[in-house]
Image 1 (cartoon, rainbow, N blue to C red):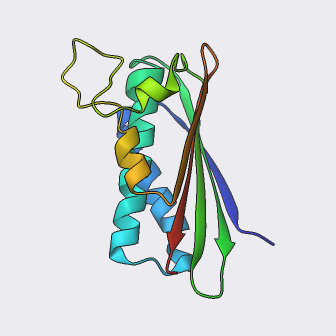
Image 2: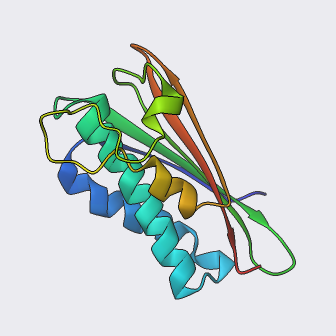
Image 3: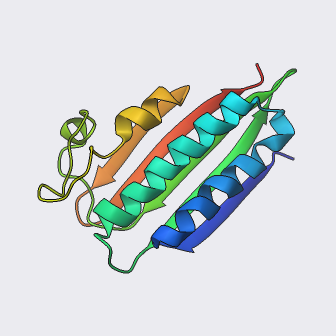
Length: 143
């Protein structure tokens, strides 16, 4: 049986640290290095923060995090999918550029997609206006 988990939580900033810790804890059977754990936590943190700040703009919403482990002889691949059901992104390519933000008057340094991509082995964003966004990440761990 392949190991997996699904976590649904309210889109509240106080849940961001729980989400990143839960995903990092789920990755422990792959014997990740400290660096791998840090990468995973940072990428998840950025994705969850995006849901809270951009998808729901501080309003009510939910975030679904799904993970599965693909084992290898040494280590494996952690698959992470983070989904929101918020406003969606009009132009994903533009949103992925460094420092792009949907909150022009707020002091933000962008949506963090560059950070997520940097800390992932594979990275993809799917979005539909009015329906939400899905961030798909993979991280090779202990390989």
